[in-house]
Image (cartoon, rainbow, N blue to C red):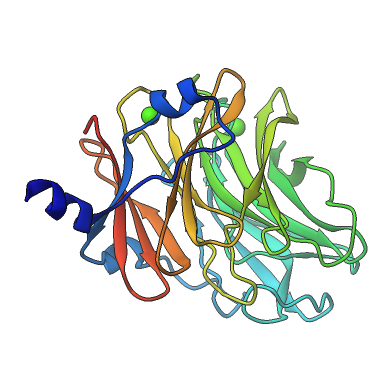
Length: 305
Ligand SMILES: [Ca+2]
Ligand SMILES: [Ca+2]
């Protein structure tokens, strides 16, 4: 009886056919448990970006040399239109700790193909990095980092552009996947046409790629929603797990960066495609919630919890 109740409430992990048996056994125990929807986790109370994109917000921080960042100078000059409309941003704005507002305007051949910039101290030096998605009309998207140097807003580092027009990427999470106190950038390159999960670190002023793994998508083409992945230490082993949809978004994959590489822990099928994901803010009990397009909601669980 108990077993049948549990089976009804959970969707079981599909076997990892390509993984060594020992690996599959070691990482058994990941489940999706149906739960009540948590719209509160997706509410965005950040102020609208002044003179910005219609859905752009102001990202803020309480500490550091940069306290706020947003996109400005809406433009139709790059007609890709994969994130809700074909209006992208021509400029990045920041507000510093002293209250100064600084701007970087891109050349006509580029836009920020993004909604709201992200603020993080990636390398732990106390200076804030602004993490953006910048697209070239001829070479597609890149992750580009900005920051302050001697009071000026400058590009600090960038990944290469993907290499072709109309090729996009979506940032999945910015967190300490390595487990040494910094924060790395996890993103999916070309999430609409067979996405590759990448992890990049920013140290010593340089962005470097740590690993890549194929078979992911964290965006539905045309959708405004960009939050299709979330990270948390769900099994309490001290390393973050990243929950992120499979290539067709009909499964949730659980991956972890360990031993210098992404490791696939589980692939959990779902009955509708993934619409969005969020981690709960509770440090005492880290959880990841998943909402499907049919309205069903799940949370990721590990048998150890
Ligand atoms: Ca920094
Ligand atoms: Ca963990």
